[in-house]
Length: 418
Ligand SMILES: NC(=O)c1ccc[n+]([C@@H]2O[C@H](COP(=O)([O-])OP(=O)(O)OC[C@H]3O[C@@H](n4cnc5c(N)ncnc54)[C@H](OP(=O)(O)O)[C@@H]3O)[C@@H](O)[C@H]2O)c1
Image (cartoon, rainbow, N blue to C red; front, side, top):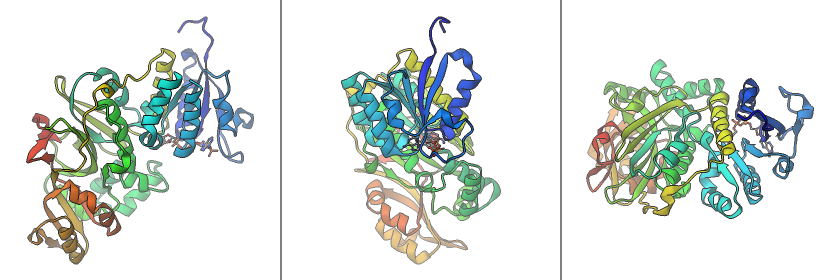
């Protein structure tokens, strides 16, 4: 950095796990020439690691403060985050955010606001913590067709699955352990129900394929109803269960998205992604397969991603969204099928589930833990019955690639790996 340049003045909105991690990194690296000059939080009575006079309780004031060069928004309230970030972009400001739920819901509008008012929004920290996947897709693969982008996008559920498989614990104790370690939210629904990885897949779709997906239309099935029997079933075949979020280019040129548990063998690079780690597999037409793996959550890993965005903003970087110029059509369920594993503790309930999913009654098997079935299911059936499957505590996982008219997707050599 040019020593004559004054430090970049940053307004930090949110001082929780990510905000403190980012603050800590900046303090440890004074040579970067960055200064957090204002911090906004919500609760005045909360005990802090810094003196009370360092905090403001009016985030709006930071948005409107002309002495700040850029804003970092890391609060845990998506609606309020959208209000603040969109207000800042209307003022043409430079903003960094980590809020994936907000981005997944409002990306088209946030992109338009940047075009209209000249501001910039970067959000590397919103997807897979420390893994530099947004910029990799946006910049490096800006013009390369991608067969697939998929992976483990949620550290909390991966931690639960790892502990269940390592220690043979059931879901409840494994989740309690994840919460005690600080890897899971107090309300686990977003992580365990696969809503969080769905948000991340929606964000990546804008950069990987140039499509704005509506998160409400992407099928997400989680692990809330997984039991030790499911882990044992996979292990008996030398496999593990992972929550895989996938974006795939179909043989007809369209793009599909799916987030659900999957049984994977050691041939998959995702097989060894354990605990709170995330992994992203890119299958590019010319570059071939690439795999990134790193910490998906936590103050320092996520703070590190925020820092790279701040430094990129200083250099004038903005996302190109190059593939938005020729967006493909989206095909989320129609004509798609996959092989599944379905389990319930009660054989009677599972028998009914098989009728919902149009699976043959003969597929049902019983064991000491209840009943399970395996076989092909259409994505249209899974989508149509998704609420009933959740409400009736049915665990569903896929056992192989998505298929369009019998052709596995992506239809390349990597299909066997995913
Ligand atoms: N934790 C991770 O590992 C991780 C990883 C990737 C992305 N993210 C995303 O990063 C964001 C922050 O997550 P976090 O884990 O750091 O959350 P957190 O620990 O719960 O902290 C949230 C912070 O936001 C502040 N806040 C909430 N509403 C506010 C408002 N209206 N105005 C000003 N401040 C407000 C809170 O203030 P008080 O201190 O007064 O309560 C708190 O300091 C979320 O969008 C999350 O999804 C988190």
